[in-house]
Image (cartoon, rainbow over all chains, first blue to last red; front, side, top):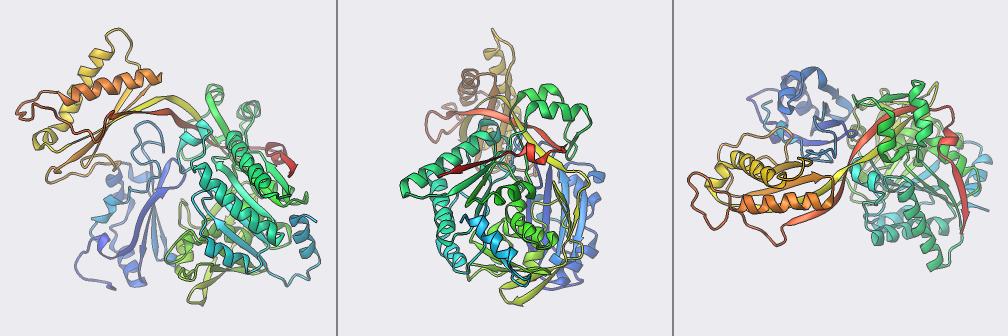
Length: 108
Length: 466
C-alpha cells in the first residue's frame, strides 16, 4: 500500500511495525516502521506523531517526549519516560513490550 | 596453543587484507540455539563465537536474587553446544552477562555449569573469568567525589541505597575482554558486560577500525533479529577495514539494508549514537547496501574515544515479599462496579489484618480485560464479558503477604453490593489454592554512570585451567 494523500487512516492499517520496548528501565521506545518511502513520508508529513499529540496517550508532559525521524530505516522513533520504572511495585509491563497500543488508533 | 593466541598470531602475520569473521551465536544464551544455523556458521570458519547471556530488560528480580532467568538444563545444553563448536574449530568463545544479570552468583552458576560440561565430556581448555561486581566502598568514594551521575532522571544515590543493594554490577567494555584474550585463553566468561564488547573486542585488538567493529557488534549481538523475518538463528559478520557484511546462517532470514538500518533503533533511545565505556559510536553517516537479496554491507560508522571512562552500573534491592491472588469473574454487574468494589474490599481487608498490627503492606490490583496491561488505561465502550483479577501484595514477610491475599480472596469472593444476584460467590478460581507466594520482590535502586580511572581493577580477570 502506498499513498501520499487521501483520507485519514489508522496507523495500524498501514504501518509495517508498531512496537514498544524498554530502552533501559526508565524509558519506553516506540518504533513505527513503514513498508515504503511513500507511507513513511505520509506519516512524517501528517504531523500526527508529534510530542504534543503523543504525550497525552502516555500521560506524560510533551517536553519529556522525543520523536526522531529515521528515513534510512523508514521509521519514526518515539521515546517516552516510564511513569513506573521497570519492575518497580505497581509496574504492569516489565519489558515494556505492550505499550504500543495507544498508537494503533491514531489517525494519520 | 590457546584459541585466542592462535587467532591473534594469525592476524599479526596478516598483511591487513584478510577480513575477520565473527559468529553471533545467540542474543539470549539459555533459551535454545538453533543447531542448523549454528553449524552452518561454524562451516564458514569464523574467528570467534560470541554469545550474549543477559540484559537489564528482565527486571530487578534476577539481579537482586542472584537467580538465572533461564532453566539450568537448557542453559547447560546451549553452553555445551557453543563450547564444543569453539574447541573443535580452535576459536575463542566469548560469553557476556553470564547467568542473566552478570553478578557474582550468576557468574558462579554459569562457571559451575562450564566445569560440569568439561568433566562430563572430558574437555580441556583455558577459561578466562571476568567479574563485574562493583565494590560498595569504591562506589561510595566515587559518590563523594562527584564520580556518580544518574541515568534518565534516576534519583540521586546515597550510602543507604548502596548498602541496601543485594548486588551491584558494572557493564564492562572492550578493554576487559581484550585483557582476557591477550592471556592466551580458549573461553571467556564475563559477568555483566556491554553486549557490543563481546563481539568488538577481538576485531579492535587485531587492528580493525573500532567504528565498524562496534556497529557490527551492535547488530549481531541479537543474532538474526536484524533480518526479515527476524529470528534467533546465528548470524555471520565479515569485517574488513572499511565496513562489514551480514549474512544470516538461516537461509530464510534476509538482512536487507532497511531491516539492518531499522535494527539500529531497537531498544535504543537514539538511533545515531551508542555510548560505550571507552567511547562513543556515531552512526549518523552509516550507510547500508544490498549485496544480494539476503546480505547487506554496512560502512561509515565512526568511533570517538572517551576522555575518561564512565561505566554504567546497576543495583537491585529488596522491597519485600510478594504474594498474589489469581481469580476471574464473568458477572456483568460485578464487572460494571469493579473499581468501587475493589476499593471497598481493600478497606474491609485492611480493617481485619491491621486489627493488631500496622498497615505494613501494599495491595495492588490488576484487572485484565479492563486495566491490566496499559500504563494509561484504555476507555472501553462496553464492559468485557469476563475479567481476570490479580491482587498483588508486597509485605515485610512471606507470611504477612500470604495473610493479606488470603483474606482478600475470602472477602472479595463474598463481598455484597447493590444489585448482586450471584450470592454463591463473586469469583471463579481456576484452581485452589488461588493464592501464590511468589518470593522476594526487588526494585532497581542503582541505574547510574560511575567514573573510574581503573577499568582493569573494576573488572578483575582470573584464569582457570580445565
